[in-house]
Length: 156
Length: 103
Image 1 (cartoon, one colour):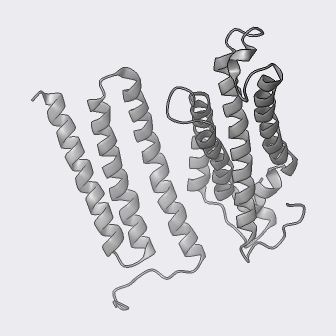
Image 2 (spheres, helix red, strand yellow; image 1 turned 30 degrees about the vertical axis):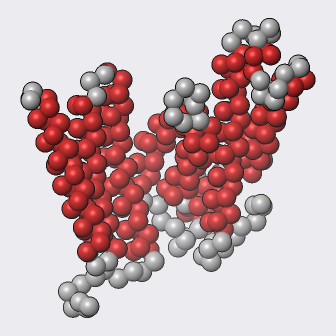
Image 3 (cartoon, rainbow over the protein chains, first blue to last red; image 1 turned 60 degrees about the vertical axis):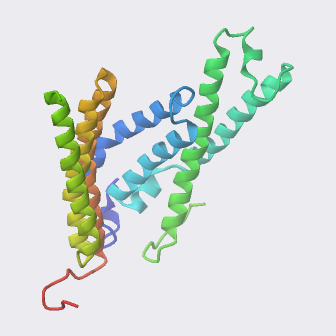
């Protein structure tokens, strides 16, 4: 994952790489923390998703945008976005199929006793996946707009 | 006032002072490198001292631990961000301000 194959384009900085290596796991943990605590504290899927997406942006700043672009699989990002939509719609419409309102979690409670609690968390995770993948995709699309990016094949 | 309260007030005032210095520096200094210098050093110290005051003021255990985590990451990330900005500016061939072209 080095930028050596693109001479003259981007030279990595040891300071930035070391900092990103040290901080990235904590940022990802913090993103999950924000997502899971969205129901009872400030935060939620949107904020946690943006923080999770910013991990990929941090890696791109440290290791070069082109290197990160080759490292990030487009299929994973699209699967995360559409999977998040599926989870959200599945939980919401499943409640309607069981005779409740859209996203009425307590109709699941005959099947699982803490369904209200974990239903919210599941929806937050879905929203987080959507937001993270859309943020990553927007970042790479914006980065491709600069003139000094030469090859962008295989990208959306 | 107890010594802890004096410490809180002193830390908050020092943090506000360094934050003010950073704001004045960002507005008054001539180019991107000197502004990054003001933003990285003074602003980091101001934020860290203020969060230190918060850590003393919140007597509960978990919030204090969170504040200390914030201080650690502020010390790591803020100078790195300034370094990245200055480095990107150098990559774009932005000339540093010198005394000769004082305008």
